[in-house]
Length: 312
Image (cartoon, rainbow, N blue to C red; front, top):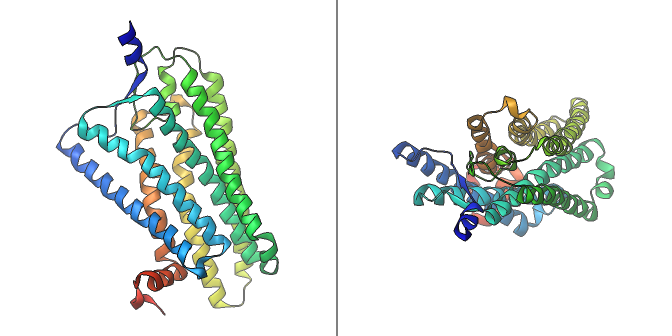
């Protein structure tokens, strides 16, 4: 009986790839993307920390985005790779809870942080004279702390619930990480109330910030069209299009996954979409923000001696 209790506290992650040569090649590709994400986000954090020209609210917020992406991908990929290579797909209830907590914290915090970054650009372009006051260091710090705190509180509530509901069906989670909605079908109780709360929580952390981002950039684009300076227009469009690209990569897969009823979702589809917001987006963000940003390229030149041929 004791042995049964011990084994029953573990889950099995079915994973993303089949246990064959094709699966191994795909895993190696994921590990390569993971490595790029680690290097890219670590580099971005280092540049913003050491280069005084990047000590502005926009780049402080960007450094937090890189930190969140770094923690997000590090929460998911190492365990997924270990399970595939070792053939051991088990994960303890506690480890599952820790993974779910960090994933949901990063997901919620990043949505709020992207809204803060949109507000930063709105103030910088539409109210430049008020920028030092509206986006002071203290305000920037409040935005960062608020994003982390609200994301962590929301995540803690979901994680505690997931760890305390009884599981009496198969303990095989049809996913490559402990995603709470993927765990709900294993519960031996009706979870419709919790699923409704997931919908409400997702609405607060996805559509509402997205509406704020849309409103901010709608006002920004209106102001940009009325700019007389061609150089100012070009710089504003470059900055805004970069941020909107990141927002799209983040919000679209998340919203499509979590705002649909469970009856309209399939595990395979959920896993494919999860690859975008847990693995690909953390890799793409530093690339998007660096290749289209002369200030970041200039910082790379000053700190690492790179891209000097691209300076204008």
